[in-house]
Image 1 (cartoon, rainbow, N blue to C red):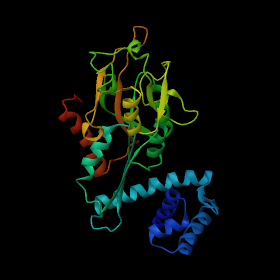
Image 2: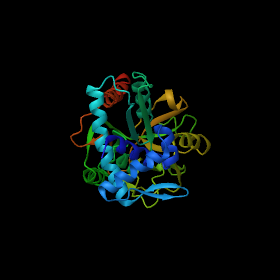
Image 3: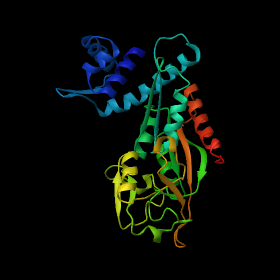
Image 4: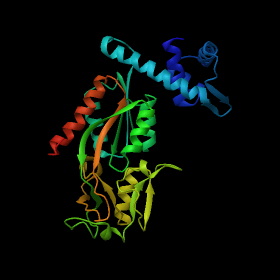
Length: 310
């Protein structure tokens, strides 16, 4: 087994095609196929299902690639620490729930590095995929929140994936809505106030538990609900449908614009009060790369610059 073979296998798993992977890796397809065959023979496993429509990972392949990413990540960390003149592009990825502050901090971090030398990726995605991406080292860091309601379930998922959660900030709950919304001028908003308006939430996939919801108080029964997959759609529905979502109240006007507002939320007396513990997840005992350290620093700076206590 060589690091080159691992890099080939990881690239194919991400692209889903030997042909396209060969082009990206600047090797011939026969050479690439032979390298993967040798790797499979060495470990007596089949990593990829090969069909006329492309390739996909076998069950063994999924596990193999997860370990391969860990090994290759450590190799890249060595290059970053000791191989300053290396020619291989260093990679850094973040997977996050739909937070504009996470994207804004990513932008500020990338500005400080030469994009000719680094491959960067940020993925706004479902909660379970944030966890899976970090578990397989597809991303070095994941951004998500925990609360009294979901902490037990999320903690179990993190433990089973050998991940750990690091606290960044505690946030009270706010109602996020369009500035022209009928409730926008209120000092605070309750569940009763929201009864006539659609609750907007991010889709978490089929058969997903409401413990994985990105919105706090997800177990509450809302009369009207609409699921979305991205922040842009959610913002559009806030305008078009007078929709709302429950959030941390941290608004990035640079990315989302100035047409939206966060109003403090007060739960009903019968509902347990809660807050959002926002933090980042990484592999246990992992030493963050220079990019990872700077990214977390940029997030903390983002909050400090806006007077948010961390």
